[in-house]
Image 1 (cartoon, rainbow, N blue to C red):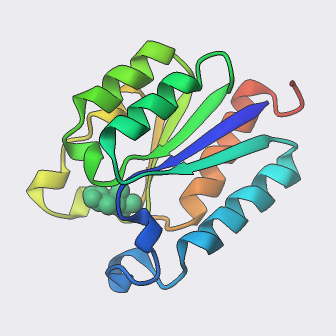
Image 2 (image 1 turned 45 degrees about the horizontal axis):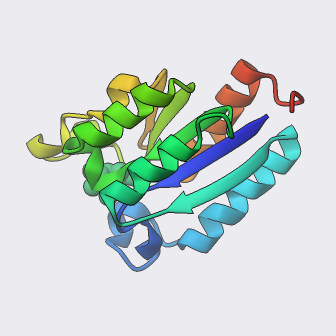
Amino acid sequence: MKLLVINGPNLNMLGIREPDIYGRQDYKALIALIEETCARLGVEVECFQSNHEGAIVDRIQAAYGREDAIVINPAAYTHTSVAILDALKAVGLPAVEVHLSDVKSREDFRQISYAGKACEKTIMGKGFQGYVEAIEYLAGRCGASQN
Ligand code: DQA
């Protein structure tokens, strides 16, 4: 099974960015945990981070015929991007939405998730562990040992 993990804008600033909300561990540590989790489950993984909406749309489109599932934290684009929603719908791959923080208990403008409408599951408020749960779910769903 091939998995694509997408992180949206400002997630490259983890560790520096609002640590009381997003934690003190950096993006590199997140990628290490994702790679370790995937290795444990026999999942082949590619991680992609961009601050640009169009680049994220391009990467989702490129997943068609190349990856089997997507974990996505669209960050701020969660609440604004119909383009990312449409791209997820276009490729039709099983997807899970992850948020480090508990978005539900935050500002009104974070209460809408467009990308989430194309995802089978949303995991929020669990920090880095949310990515582990998303990967475990998709590995079970898609059959991790299938290539
Ligand atoms: C976030 C929540 C979003 O509202 C915010 O814009 C982010 C990160 C999270 O992981 O908690 O950048 O997606």
